[in-house]
Length: 210
Image (cartoon, rainbow, N blue to C red; front, side, top):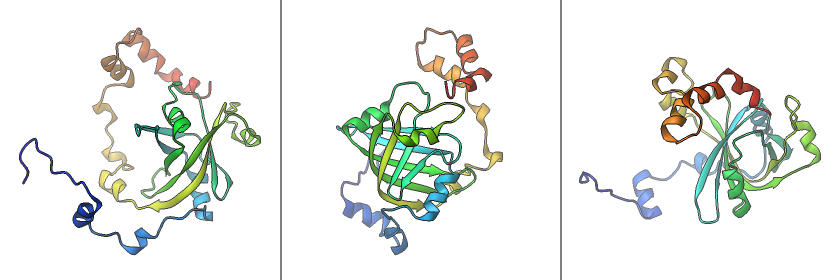
C-alpha cells in the first residue's frame, strides 16, 4: 500500500506488462490498414466521433464531431473526409494538425457498446468535389479534414458496459447546472446569466449550420 499523497509510477513497458500481462492474440492482431466493408457500414451508421490531436510539442486536444449518420465520407479504402460545421472558431484540433498531422478517431453508434477506432495522418482541405456531397440543410462545409488511414480496428464494449452509458435509467442530466450556468461560473463573461440562458436555449438549434 502506498503512502497517502505518494504515487507509485510505472516508467517502462516491462513494468506495464508485468502488471497487465500480454494481450490475447486476437487483440494483438486486430488492427488493419484498409477499410473493410463492415468498417464502411459502421461509418455509414455513425453520427458521432471523437477526434484526438496533438501539436508539435505534444500538447493534446480531443474534439467531438457530429452530424447525420454517414457524415464521414469514405473517399477510398484508405481515406476518409470529415466535414467541419459551424463552431466556436477556436480550431484547437485543426491548429494542432497544422504542426502535427497524426490523429486518432473513435466512432460511436448510439446503443452500441463497441466502437470503431481509426488512427492516421490528416490534412485540412478548403475545397474539393466531394464537398457537394456533404451539404446538410443547405450548408456546404468551408473545410474538411482528410484522413489517410494507418490503423483501424474495432474496440470491445467493456467501458460502455461498466459505465451503463446507453441505459436511460442511469442518466441524470439535472445533477449538474445548465451549460449557461456552468459557463458563467467558470468564466468572467460580459454576457449576463440571463443572456447566456437565452443564447443556449431553444433557439440555439438554429445556429447548428449557420
